[in-house]
Image 1 (cartoon, one colour):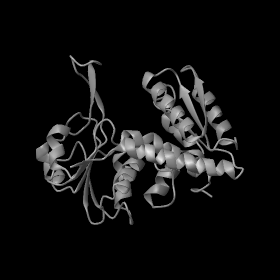
Image 2 (tube, one colour):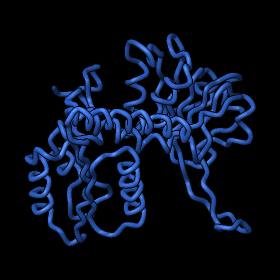
Image 3 (spheres, rainbow, N blue to C red):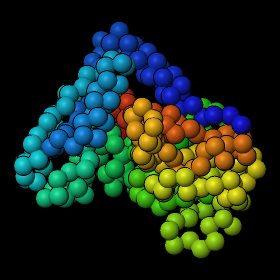
Amino acid sequence: MELLDGKRIADQIKVEIASEVETIKRNGGTPPHLVAILVGHDGASETYVGHKEKACAQVGFKSQVLRFEDSITEVQLLEKIQKLNNNPDVDGFIVQMPLPKHIDEQKVIEAIDPKKDVDGFHPVNVGRMNIGLPAYVSATPDGIVELIRRYNIPTAGKHCVVLGRSNIVGRPIANLLSQKGYPGDCTVTICHSRTPNLKEFTTTADILIVALGKAEFVTAEMVKEGAVVIDVGITRVEAPGTKLGWKLLGDVKFNEVASKCSYITPVPGGVGPLTIVSLLKNTLKAAKKEVYG
């Protein structure tokens, strides 16, 4: 069993990106510029945006956070987005979710210029990804693909089972791994909450990707010997007697499943560290005009 160390891979990619930024600057160019819009004072959102700011600084990007009170109207927010769309100095930007209930999140996503949508949520980017065109791929699926690639895990002809059908993880990763090329050429099965006899599917998986949001849902009896298990879930649970009083659990019962696997992601430290790196990669692509020319 080998751990898929997302933190190590993320650090490696940051070094590679920082080197590219140095080359851009040496050649007289300007470093990539990422902007984040943060509405309100949600604690988790504040933390995520803080991590993104720190990561930008590590690789030499220019970054900025535009903060607005949660009283901002939908119309006002859409106006701010339009300004960023029209600002040639901004390569890419994100709107941190969730947004206050009076703002339509889908309307906000669709207002972002696809060429600056480095989160990869705009329907144009999702559509381009689905038919194999260059696109900004959303963070978690891109992180999973990066882990598979960096560890040289064989995918051609393998059976990949994806637990979860969300538009953020399940559907895009299923699509990416079924496409031609590497990592890809998998036969993919998507399972979800209405799938009967789940174990019949999971025990046939060469690669099992779990994105359900249910702590320790996958047990040893559900996993084939030698499988690659990628755990996307992360749930905070109470842990009386520990220093913090809580701990983070994945969707896979790690201590029970790990010994059966050829590779497995830890939680935390697996897919998570690569999500911010995916954002950096997309911003660098935007600055270099690699996706849309």
